[in-house]
Length: 383
Image (cartoon, rainbow, N blue to C red; front, side, top):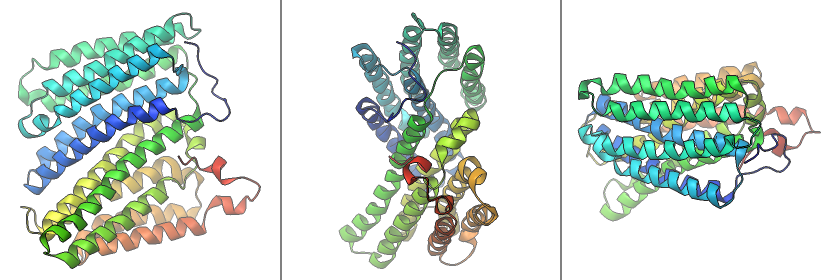
């Protein structure tokens, strides 16, 4: 398993990577659905806390596989088998998500996570065999194993330590790449990674489209609140499209070369917000049909907070370094206005309108318009 060329031309996501992403569609859907259930019943703090913890496990496993594949993907039979094993771990984790949300039971989530990480250890050990990055691969393998032992021991701790111990071990997980990359840098491919992150963003935004469709399904099945539900579906579609537009406006592959850890780790907030956005749409449906314990203002915040976090995250990580003053004022201002929407009438309508205005500003200030010699695909990697 030799390191791949980081400047390889035409590098794109493999069919195995796309297949691998399918199990994360399941995991994200279950996590977002569980968040929706908790929010609509008024368990806001517990629901959000559980979601952030579970989503970290999903995101971290996906991210580690993605960066490893960018550097060492051989796509031979053993690599494929170990990848399928990681997929099994994701499904096991997904099976335990509802228990984690409702009763705080973390055994299945932890076991599924450890299965994924142990398979990743096998990949790193294989990369160490005969590779010029042997010491780096060994550092990754040893670090991951040590942290997985701690995850299993964590199951013996009393429930009141769950959040604190999770945060400590999550920080330990994120420290492993910092330490290992000091030994020797792995040759990840900028275009490949930004495509992979873009694909995962599309998966998450797809959950929002499903939630938008659910509003129409409810209207057709019950015949009640039809105008409100159809309007909500339309507004959710507009908002989702705007988030897609904002994310893929920025030339991510240029940013990642300069700040790969910040860019890679910072996407946790973008991804988590995109997943929570779909839960917010479902809560809005419940608010329209009077099936939630939240007030209208509280229900609106479940929609606007994820949008604001997503927009601010994309702006900070990718848009800001390549934008002019107008864009760098309009994008964060738009996020703040969306965040404040629940405090004024018709919040969903205003949110969609503000996001459309942000997109208009991005279109009018697209840096590619001033550089006709550069092709669009080289500026913005879009799957």
